[in-house]
Length: 397
Image (cartoon, rainbow, N blue to C red; front, top):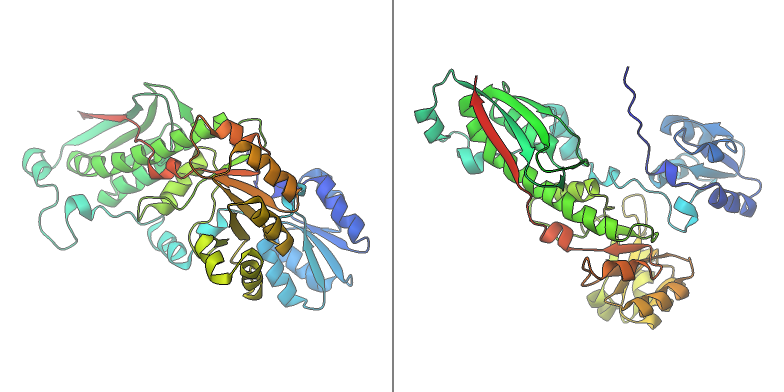
């Protein structure tokens, strides 16, 4: 048995210091913790278990207050099961925002259905082969390549890069022909040097030639995003700030682009307009100010299990102060110079998260991150990352 040395980015974010602060505020509370939490948390737990165990504990315990050390979306189930009790979640990293898994937001009923029906995400190749039911396909390969001929080939990096999209490329080949064998030689997220073989492919020659361009297009695009993202992550290493992506993605490729950004080391910001409240200048103008806008968001029931935070875009320090006092979870500091960012961070004083955005480049991001903000958002990592160069040469078998 080969064990993968993995970890959970949600549970590993809990700190004993943050937990103890919550316990001091609620000394009579019992503690329910997921087994992936650090040992420093588990030693304080009254019950340790997965989701079903924690939900059962929520109803069984006679305690009126329960501190929960796991992903925050379990809370609405606990509150529904035991509406007379108070459930508190341990903040991530000792901050003020509850722990949240960014990957759960990617799950939809449609994606779950397609995964069950097809064994993986759906990949369309009609752009190259023509729509279903239309005669044609790869007319050149069908005319020139003998039907029985088989090829093998190796995908290789032509320069240093961070790889992302190998499972997507494999799915493209499998969509064209289930006889194709795609063997990854590295993993997504790996940094490789020029000349590194990243995948080996074998199968019917016609099918391989038909699938190679859409497979390479996606792999080169996603690896390009991951590679540029990694450069930005390296530029802020040691500052304590995290790199976020944005909604500036190629239409139809948002999920894949955000996946590639994660492979490069970034953290996903909101996926769309549905999973987070982000109050911007137009919203502020309609509401008449920051406080009124935040109050409307709270009155609408946000944040909740599906909408994870209320964030406010701030152009001035006065807006920052108003947003914090109104109870915003995150303040978005728009196009502020590093000195102004430092003053904004001082106003926030740990009461919520601070995110910097606007015109961020590889040359400027370090100074921005050193201002003390929690996050720096960069649109160009998914909007305009150059594709990497990956070679694929075939030999007949």
